[in-house]
Image (cartoon, rainbow over all chains, first blue to last red; front, side, top):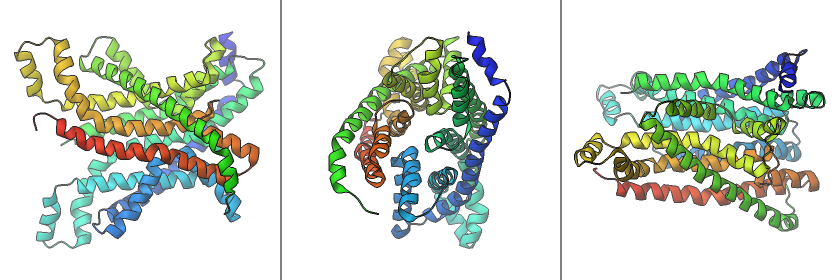
Length: 225
Length: 221
């Protein structure tokens, strides 16, 4: 009885379809991660400024993404923008927008945190040496801050990959959706199929996220000072 | 963008029920998660044989998989092998399963922050391991880990939005249903955002206050 379900996983192109679905998930995650690393570093450096006019808007932006759940953001962008602004956005594009905005907000906080956690004398001595602001960032602050921010960045990337599971809720055909389609087709012949499919997807996410979180922990330990 | 305010007034009761359900499920889940987390981190602290390996596996699995999949597995997968759970129970179990691992991490950091001199002094005055835990380590570790617990509370409250994937009528799912029935998208989503703000803004402010408070209670600094 139990075995009949697992065999469906390997029947026909089912496995191939699931893995292609996983690729869609990873594609969204990867593009969003790249955008948010680039934008996050830029905004993070801008946010180290002491000017209140700079700090407040970015802080507000970060808090909005911290307080409102990502699923709600997905719904808001997915339903509100096309209806009110006459724009046709595919679910995948909506996902990319939301994940990039969220990732940028969180990345900028990591970058900012690691820069301001550096001892003050680093910035002061580089000024005393006569470095320009650009040189100070390029040769003193950024190299040190990089070490501090890479482990939390990897953790954030793991979180972003995990959160891509929500894409199925706005109708992106990714790994969970494909799994549901396979379940719907085979449910009558193989009653245990949903156990195996969801179990398999569970395993897929684990296989991707586990090495990443392991890697970040190792870096954290190695670079701990 | 136009809003039908009359519709918002009419829909308010639905949101009120949904808000309560969200708060209720999140509260139960968070309390259970804190208990699970503390038990797990104490097991790991003492390096109990076999048990601590099991805890390690649990922590890795819970931290590296999305809640949605955990819930789908519990809600749609398990009934097929004979274990049927109601939606709300699945939600609480899922939240506890995920939250426990995050809380364990926060509490472990708290226990590691307890200074060695505290533990050595405890041993020197002849406390047993149990007494050491009960009177010296846990009270201090708890106050150290309040910021971590707080961040996790907010995280878990937000994760309840994922419950809309299984049949639990919390805020997000109620909104989805209302949108499907009345097609008042803007109004429904506005209410959804306001609903989460009502829960999370006071909580965020409270936790910021609490963090500052517990720092006064720390010993030895």
